[in-house]
Length: 412
Image 1 (cartoon, helix red, strand yellow):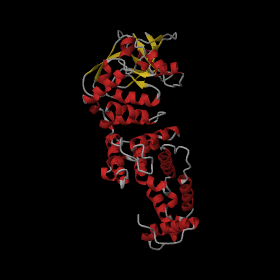
Image 2 (cartoon, helix red, strand yellow):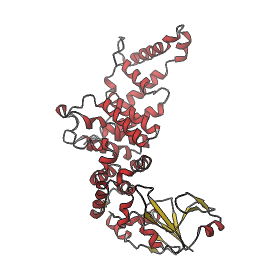
Image 3 (tube, one colour):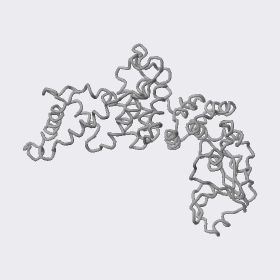
Image 4 (cartoon, one colour):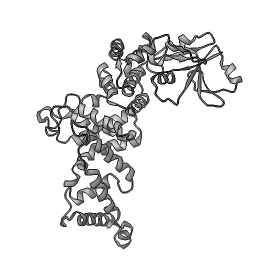
């Protein structure tokens, strides 16, 4: 029995990057042999075991054969006679198909180390075309290693997979899983660039693909289109280290601009409602988690009001707080502001421009929070009027701070 470190741990060690995850391949062993040593089996699809002390994953060397469509359309063969090279041959990229022996020897049958040096993402072999998830994985690796390029023959193979419809068999959960991982990489825009180049973006995220070529508003740098702006916004969310919900909201905030009638471009009248509708469809299709979905919908609907905060009346600001549930969920409201920061700075030459809306709205929120809603409710004899009384008190408190004269609340 021989044990090798494989995959990402070897790759990242050669790159000098940290990697806490270490995967192992066991050659010349059986499940029974590992069980006798105290390993615990996990998974049903193929023989993977957890080390009794470290809990790291040890997989028996295996081969795989295409038996159907999509990610699950494979049969696996694990046996003591499966060699290390046969196991490495089933992997996606040459840079992920290297192994390290116990004595430190590098095993690199598919020339991953030269590709690392040349900064190339290259598929290992023709079996790459059998698994559509690998398209997403290459795109994700492009977001992580943003200075790497996809080998021309690999990109051609990815395009062939899209044309053949293999990508259409991807299940929603796996698409979301890879999308979420890619959004959390250093430069997420590269993921979408690669997906667009091979044609997969139009199949998997047509709402995002439709933004390419759509002009920005005339006062927002007409020399770039909405697709470029969106990618700049997403990259801003990564550069600032924001959480996944913020990054996803950055991606989807302007989806409605992709459906703007051509005769009114570069204006985008009413795009907020269209953005909400398209975001809802996308989230339902990919089964996006509720925290990401909810923030995306708030961002699509209200980012314009956040940007215009200093010009809004007190009544509109209070309504914004109520509609976004800012008083009860200040953390999520802060994420909305974070996403708006990315939208504002995600424009040519705007990265270092001052943006006062977050500070302005947080100060207003503190004023509104200071209103004692409980006392107002206790003093109100008509319980049906409690919400209106509390709303009016909050508006009046904010008007005083803003030195705004009292008036009837404006229509929403």
